[in-house]
Image 1 (cartoon, rainbow, N blue to C red):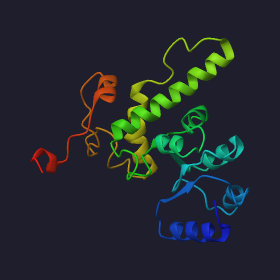
Image 2: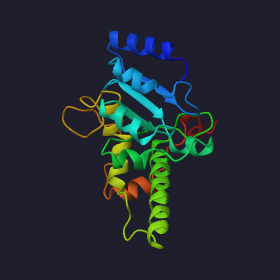
Image 3: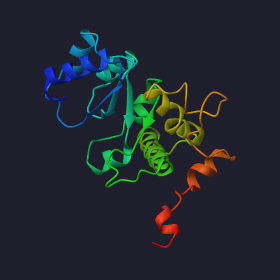
Image 4: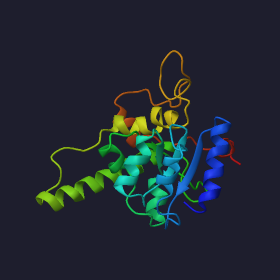
Length: 204
């Protein structure tokens, strides 16, 4: 968070216009108690989304997500830019949904299958290292199923954007957001590659 009054004004404007407001939270917090103050003023809630938020303490993260605000993990760019551990595991521990993204498509892939794989494997690595530190050996089983990771990119992303009534799941009322319908899901997630751009297919 940077200038508190600017953040407050932006969120108040978004609330007045019934918009989803998304903010990137990384680096040093210029206002250490900023989210607590926003919460006290009633400016947090289901139409607020935080991207990254790696620097938040467990207490602040619990308070923010407790208002219904969502968090988007962009694991690849967070590892690239030294933001710290992606919040995937901490959100799961709080039983909060995880939405995912790429953040900087000029330097990171925008292919959501790659984003799913990267986020999933990063957290599996963290889980394995924590298990090894505790017990001297890795987990007895894979800690996160592929089906859950697919949800991060589909229904949980739709919920973050408050569009889950229209997209994010294969239901009669919703438009599909992914073509990964074949089973098993794990094969689709691990092996899918994006289609080449139309200009490449035409040889240009």
